[in-house]
Length: 380
Ligand code: UDP
Ligand code: GLC
Image (cartoon, rainbow, N blue to C red; front, side):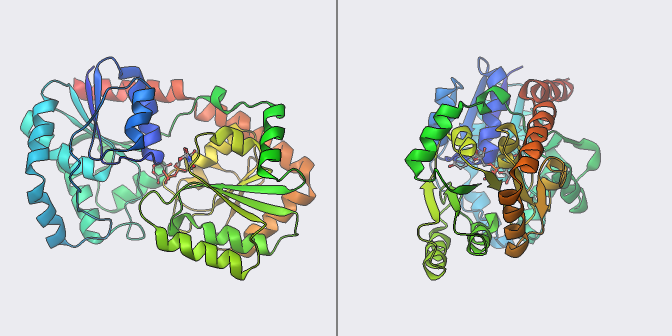
């Protein structure tokens, strides 16, 4: 089957990293069309997945836009829509991986008469999107998509609550290659040395820097923990959240945590860095649609504490294979960090259980098989 994948982003967020795994089995007969240039293109090339930047024009539909802004931007999109429709004629399916890709892909699927698949990586609720964006996404998916793949039950529920058709929507979790998350103790020790955290209790946060990812909650929690507790913040402000980054630095200065919180920027050695942590914290203050970092921590055999909302509650069972805390509650988070610090034996047992369950539930070969079957039924 020949697939035209579409993604709006030039940068590798979770939806893009997920797309790499989905596109790989089709790489000798697929194309990934991007609406921006950047490091995601390079990652696709490194994975030998054909990629083309279809436009470098800024697409202005913002997460919080009104109807007129949304309509105004649509009229500017005509050249891109025709380009995608023309390209789509050489493929069997259009696979839209983001919301702007859905907008373009929907019209192109109509013009080129190709089935449209929409991979929903978002929780379509007012916490994340404007009413206009919600309506546009739901109506386009209902009208044009043959299949909606939701990245969690939480994303599917929000889609259906917003008016999306349940009967075309299937939940498929992100898949992972467990082998990539195995690291050597020697390598881990070296990395801890390099980071200057050998004798510390290290809590890692692996997310792009963005207010809803809640790095500020972890910083507040660290201030409530003993001095040996240190945090590493791994990730960059991918979508221009510079004000938030400034706020985080101010917060660290005000709390006197300069020596206990380190920013590492965007990194490609996530498994190694996770292995170098004693605990991984997921701190989103709005419901996380899925939360790749949670599964990745589990695969690294690390205890993970996640914010109890959205997809995270489908991944973690509190006290069994991880911990859950109320989103936005730094004191609760600090209590879990302290529990893990004091009872490292129980924490290790939970981490070991996490690896076993995650390897079974999120195996990429199995997930790709599920997707292949769904795509086959669409192409018929
Ligand atoms: N990630 C990365 N380098 C970084 C920070 C994050 O490669 O410096 C990866 C991380 O391992 C995960 C993805 O980015 O696979 C983030 O996905 P997630 O679903 O957790 O959140 P999103 O940013 O997509 O909302
Ligand atoms: C999105 C979501 C994230 C999810 C990822 C992969 O980026 O924000 O929660 O894990 O897509 O599906």
